[in-house]
Length: 589
Image 1: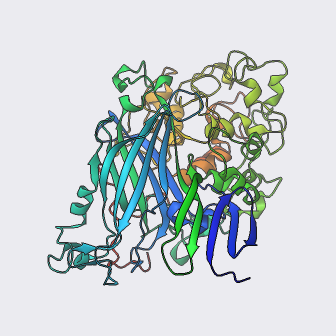
Image 2 (image 1 turned 180 degrees about the vertical axis):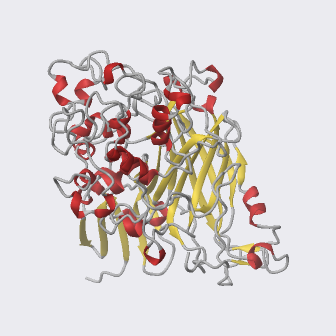
Image 3 (image 1 turned 90 degrees about the horizontal axis):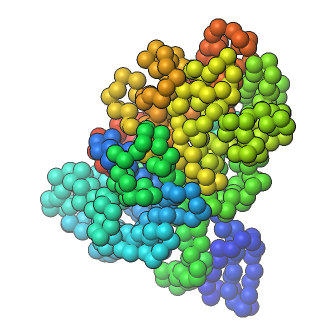
């Protein structure tokens, strides 16, 4: 039998191959992914690879929230002649949950169409015409209802090939500059909630020393010269979907932010995640024609909290984790948050000595000479037996049975940070003002992004005021720096009352473009959130005067090596910087 007729690729839950009646049938696991090439199978489908997700109050108009979902990783600016683009026959979606019940409350769906205006040339842009010219349709669903179109023919700017292609009035597009084309790619939704939308290429805003992190944790913040840290996304582009949405459109009752009771009003918490889906079957023809897509839509990529599947879920479980949504997480996967692998490399009694780059980060093994948060130890679990957390979030009549688990010490901090958000309840309040140094006592409120839908989403309390980017205390360390200020700065540490503290609007309360999520998450694995609420590091003696010990200072001073993006951000929507030009010099960055 000849096997040359056609090829059919089917996305299912089984990995198999079969040859039947002259047709190759490839069945591969349906996958989802977070971060750049993060899961084994989505790495082979870059057009659908969801790389990063951001959600923050718009710094230039604080009645809005901006959500940015990025796709198509590691784009070389000079990567012609077939430049990077959004894919056809893919549904790119941004999902919003705002009332704590299972299922999307708002879904934005984007589909893209490409055309060649001049198929006689190998150039992407020539004589005022574009090949791979891309447009999009945006649709919106509310409360699971039918999708309605809010942008009918959105313009996607072309790749930033170079000055002749973009600006030459004879051989190129004749634009004044690339920003002029970008402006044409910004649309205002019609018949909807006042959304402003941009879809197109941009500088990749994520920054991290990929070479060091993946070389067995060899972070190298203190190294210099050729051995110093390098931004693995430096001078790389991405494709962004950015939506600027009125807070009243996102809030569950349609209320403006001026209606918030206070800056931690739980009625203004939203959860955000993004995804990409493809038809279940793709048929490839040996005649060289376009492939045909058919069948039900299958989700192949998703992202909520950054680095979840990249740095928390082990490689043997990534594809299974990726097959889920925030509404049907596998409870067994919670083990990876409760006993994180990274914790083993921050524990001298385990493998801490094997990863010198993480030496400043150490787990509390004897916090307050009572609590052991090493992997498989008990953490705060012993207080469950007597309901020692009564009156707090750890009360067995509230969330105690979820947060306190035997041999799963990080169920009390990492699990809620990633899967529920953090409530404004003891013990999740700053140690400032906690009576007698008791970590379970009432302290200073500083975060409330709790949304009782148990799954991986980026949670944001829209009532928290922004920290101006030029504020002297603005920090890419987000909530970690807010906690430091709340514990040590006399302006905030002198009172246990609720106050606005700079960077309360930072990750993991949403995610700003500037936030150094790699450093924050490594500090969190090391227990910095536990320390903030009064479960200090081992070199502090319970009852002592000063909990700011050398071990705590080591954690707070730790850096993953790349503290900021390799270029600036914009002050106005879409805030991500314009894409790098392919004509520029990108060697040696």
